[in-house]
Length: 297
Image (cartoon, rainbow, N blue to C red):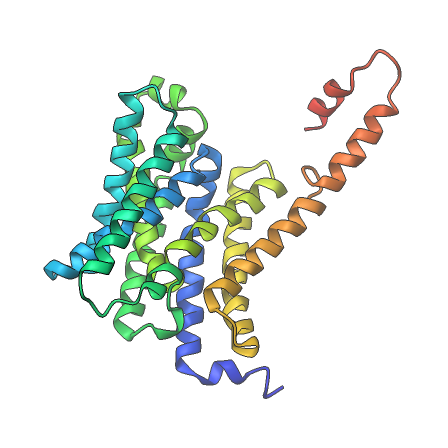
């Protein structure tokens, strides 16, 4: 029993659990909108595009978070501008913009002398957070969480049906940039904990789990938050005993939860799909299987 409680005897482990839970909750709520909107690649793009902003902010003496936010938002704005003024599709534009900005950041990183560690930027350093980092993460993350919940209905309608949202008088352009800003802030909040690369999984996987397990958006958010919070807590806890990368353990647990949901989800899982297919094949002649499947969904 004492061995199982050993991680809680170290302050840095407790701080890591607190930060992991806070970051996981914020990412999970936002991930529901990204999955519904089809913006998973946007999270990938912005997370990679923050690197040049971090390096430039360090070089000129500004807060790294400010540089990361501006750089991430610039990526989103450039993506929207190029998409609106060319025939190239949005996912292709995002691929070009974020890889270009990420490469630019790598060049700057190699040319500007600094005490920044690239591994910490890419993969985070949740066990090495100082008290100021813990405070800033909780304050900014909490504010972002409250903002998303306060605007959840408008954001939901915009993600689900932008045309209807525009018809009833919602400013869809404002909601577009507001959602991008919330995404950029969430990524900045998560950087020190899980880094540029692993934050992508935290912005996608919890929402995917909720999407598989329910058709109700509110339930989807609850499931996503529970998945992220549980994975964050037990990921930090597990990493202590196996001496593994803490951020990677968090993401790995989320991936395992997704795999279980993918297989065993009662309505949209692989096993449920096979049962529906068998039931459809057993229907009387003249009733199309596709129609049965649609009604069951």
